Length: 259
Length: 89
Image (cartoon, rainbow over all chains, first blue to last red):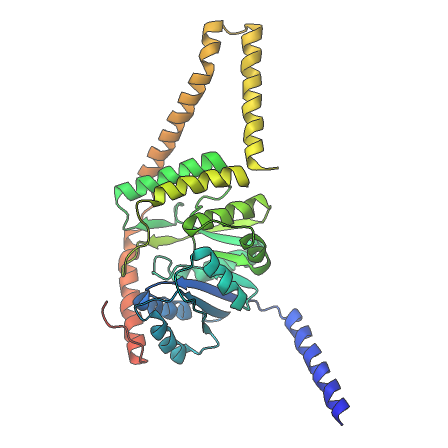
């Protein structure tokens, strides 16, 4: 009797694996790193669920021990939306953006990884555009770009725009990346592409985003772009400071010599 | 091939052309000596032009801010009704 049960379980497991492989409906894991985004994360989650009605997805929130109670809010959101769709995978303290994505990846079960910010500068209404673009073109990576006609930025003063444009021209001249928005962090990756590229990236912060896309470009991954609009954060404090320019230049030259 | 090697190759090719121009005197020597300077200055001007043009044509989306505000109100209403704390910051 015991042997028969064993065989039945084994057959059942095989059937699950086979059906998973045949499954044509793809699953999307959205990884959102957070730090002190108590209000924003709730708004983002609402909008994600609003705009991804017919999609199989999960949200993996990597919170770095926010002192403002972000994790309590996330638990409340889990009560509303289900803790199978909102995964809270916290870390004890601020450990950096790159490692946050890697940590999220370990807990993600999707075929695709989407990364986005928690501060509402990335609007979830563009998520279907990313997904559609990937399905239409079969691209490995779809990156959101703010610098094309249907995209755009709001809430940046002249100095900010100048810095952004100057940084972009410098990066394009030095790196020839083939992508218009290097520092953007609103992207969709095929899981295999993400795993491949993230393991070879060592930079911190937004230079990490640049390193990801440049390495992916060097490795020959098919990269497409969709226009996105970027409204500078409404609530909370931005984590972009003055020393970022020095870090940017260091990162640029690092990428110039190592990619 | 590493990207830096591509750039090195390009620089070597340009240097080769410059040296050959010096040697064969197709262009008067005095001009040829200054060619690298002209090249660097033109590159610099081109870069500045690109920054300026890009700055002028920087795509903006002022309507997105008001759309976002509407979304925020909608989100807050829904979440409040479901017991999520969305009190003012």
